[in-house]
Structure formats: C-alpha cells, structure tokens
Image (cartoon, rainbow, N blue to C red; front, side):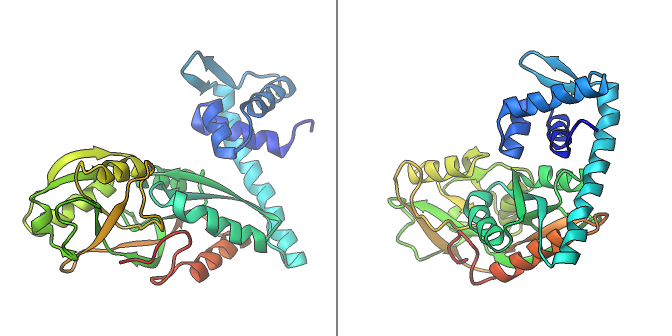
Length: 308
C-alpha cells in the first residue's frame, strides 16, 4: 500500500467539505498538503476522485464517493488501534474531532483542550466550530465525534449530558439609558431596540423568552457573529441577550460592555456534551468527556466568567 492514513484523512476532509480551503481549515494544515494528498491518491489508485470547479470548490466523482465511504471505515478501524494501545499501555492517544457551538468556542475550547492535551500528550484534538444545526448534522454523519454545545433541538438519536446551566442575561453599552438598573425585566427591554443573535435554534430560544411572557421584542438589528453583535451593542445600536459570558467586558473595538441580570425565572441553557447514540465511545472520547465533567460546572467554565 503506497498511501498513508494521513492522506486518506485529508481526502475525507476535502470530500466532506467540498473545498480544499475548508478542509485545510478543519485540519489546520496548508492547502497544498491537501491538494498533494489528493493528487497522490488519484495517481496511486488510477481514478479521478474530484471534479474541480473554478471558484466553486470540489465535487466527488462516482469513484470518489465510493472511496469516501471506504476511507471513513478504514480510518475508523485504524482509530481502534489507539484504543488497543491504550489498553496495553494505560495511555490515552489518537485524534478526536470536537465540535463546539460557535458562540462558545473562542472562549472555552482553547483552555479546555490545552489542559487535556497537556495531560495526554499522545492525544490530538481537532476543533470544529458551528451553529447548533451544523453540529448535529456533523454528529449524525460521523464527521464530529463529540460536541460541546447547548440543549437546543436535540432529537432522540443524539445523547446529551448537561454540565452547567447558563441563564440568559442582558448586554448593554456602558452609556445605554438602562445601565443604571441593576436588574432588568423583559417587559422593560421590549420597549428598547434589541440586537438579535441570528443563528438557527439560538434565534428561536431568545425570541421564545419574550413570547412566553406575551411580549414581542423590538428588533433593531441582528448578526450571526457574536463579536459583531457585541460591538454593535457597545456602540449603542441596542441591547442584546446572551448566555455565555466572556471574561472580557470589552468589545473588539475597545468599547466597554455592561451585563445585567434578568428579573424573574427564564429558561437557562444547559451547556454539555452531545454525541450520536450510534457511536460507541472510544477510550479517548471517554477520557475527554471525563475531563469536561471535571472542568465545567455551574460555578466555573474554562475561558468564561461565572454565570450571572
């Protein structure tokens, strides 16, 4: 056999993303390395695996589609060798693809994963950020083995273990006219412009907080990017609601932000671990899950300020 598991890994990433650039971002290696692996496999196997579309990425040929299925099986079986080695040596190793809610990933993943790999140097964590919909799709397809996310729109084929509760809070500019209030009601907020986090499931969650009290928020703007939303709020476009709380109270443009508790009882989001019910957890998955249980609680979450 004159190709490597790494080359198969690169091929699978390109096949699943339909893009050399996206595959490169997922694996954190250079685009030429992806292209070179694909070219080597095509030469070695004597088949064309992709159709190249100018400015539109890649699409799998019929041969490429068949190889993608087999390559994923080979990589899965090869991953079992790490479990065997772990049983023999008592170490934890291998590659684990972790999905994470895009609003949480910049805060939590770096510290959480660094602590894990410091304890288990033979393990490699590959992070993949996305909204809730894309994370669930990734778990079902096997692209993601484990996801750190919220208890939003989870079907019976997804197993979820909650680790901490994150109640909603209000985010304001330091010169917003409500900043003098230590606690805010949704009824008061509904009279002011709201900047909405416009992500699947997240959007519905925040709107439902108002709907459950017979209120309709005044949407003054929206963004799918958490940092854009925070900067809009800091520039007094309006307030926002959020659950995850960064340690920094400053937007990316340097303007200050203020957080306020919400009066009353509102549904808190649970942050926790999700995986496909069809996936048998490996020793690496179990080790990382145990690590998350020890690091994440209602009192402390890596990279985040404590919940309000």
